[in-house]
Length: 340
Image 1 (cartoon, helix red, strand yellow):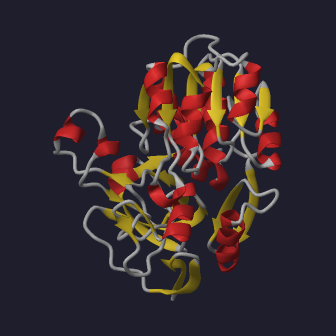
Image 2: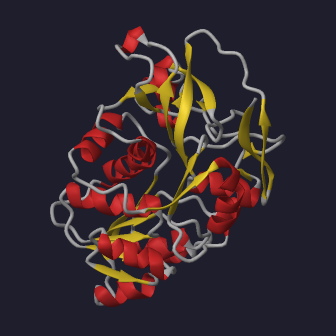
Image 3: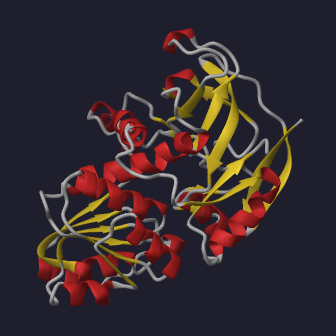
């Protein structure tokens, strides 16, 4: 009998026996090697849902994962035992958004690890073969897991279109913010000014290349002589994230919002945004970015390992959720190894 981490509702995570369903046509079975605890998983844990995706019955989270094939997948030229990643987003492929090249915006999406679709915080999972991402043989389970959040960061920077040597403000130094910071540097941005209220996350941002680190938007205003930055990328979980991104932006600047706010509500004084004439974009999940994510990791152009501060077994997963929800000192990114 398999075991899994179930979310029953706000602040209610339990490990219990899990009845693995039967496989469907076009699927293959993976032995889960590792799975990440994502910020969206944390929102399900803290709020019981994100927008219309609400926990109505216990479900298994986990959409950042890598696993070992339990059989040959000849369509992809892969053999049993190969380590692969999985794109959790199964778009319908036929709606106007999919046809326009935006599968991340598909309203008919079936997303692994978002209710009601069980995810990978268990030891085995059926996945569509079409969502398997082949990996270099040198890649580790940790790196396989981190490809999905890295893909989110790549998509956000694609939307931001940083200019060569442009100074950029990054709000929030959790895993997504730290990955965005690094992708910005690879993409040719100049100084990255990073802010976060937690000192251990600020220290991590400095380690990973931020030119300046501070606690909040007041620091960005001070560093820029009260003008703000021409590009601001927000990656917080705060209802004030939108407001702070606006206040950090220069007149005529651009803002990309990546974070999901606690409570699914933003606070925003409208005049500040209007008077700056800002261009504002919202980032959701990712597009077709896995090839670039794999190359960035495989070539060592950025670091996905340093931010992984905790690695635990499945039985310790409820405690990992609690630590993240409480912003425990030293916690940045946790990975769960279901068979450990």
